[in-house]
Image (cartoon, rainbow, N blue to C red; front, side, top):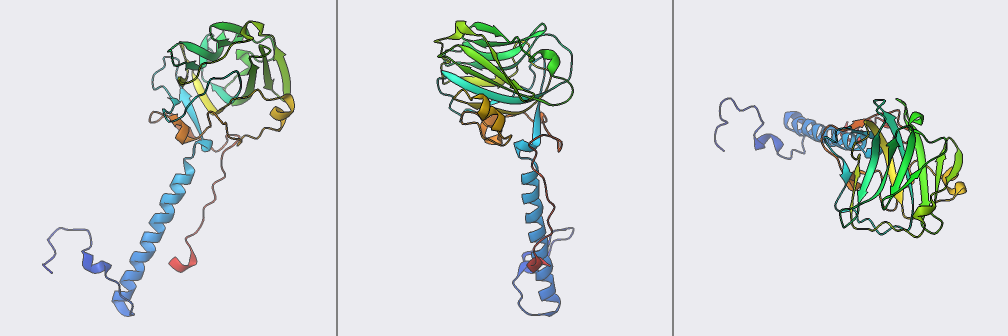
Length: 259
């Protein structure tokens, strides 16, 4: 082989030959094997550390850097639903929308947010104000969880928070359906200023007993809190080990055969 060019810092392919004997050559291959194993271990560890269960997503009132459900997620027509999430506010702004779903006709078909001192859910242009403990004041600088369930058959909306199941009358929505095939995004006009975590959507209205037993890692069958379900701009997903469903990370030493 030719001479090694001057100034080259990377080892030539000669140093990667398989040496089975002892001595300097065998030691050199053993060192390379250890380095490769450690690099692989570090890469796998880094991948585990950024699963979305370990991250909250920043949203902005001016709707800059919008997070939305990936195009690969197909949203069906809904005649009932349950949506669960956790919120952390960054400002005391009065009016904001947490999420907005535009159906296949590009019409706002589903949205939840704050109007003044009340939380409001919109289904096909019909407003339902929640007269329960769910108000904008409930959400603070600490993460707070909530679930909302709705069923077209009765037009009723139920809110589950603080271990309590509270129904709200929403009879104008009886008989309505949320047309599928649209786009689901975080925020609205104006958007929520803060962090959203573990937003999941199901195509059925859960009962009080189901919501009491619901685990934070239960997967939404329409939208789940997983990177594969979302298109998230750079820098808005932030790792936080204090999140309710954060995956515990265990540092492991490389296997013995790499030593």
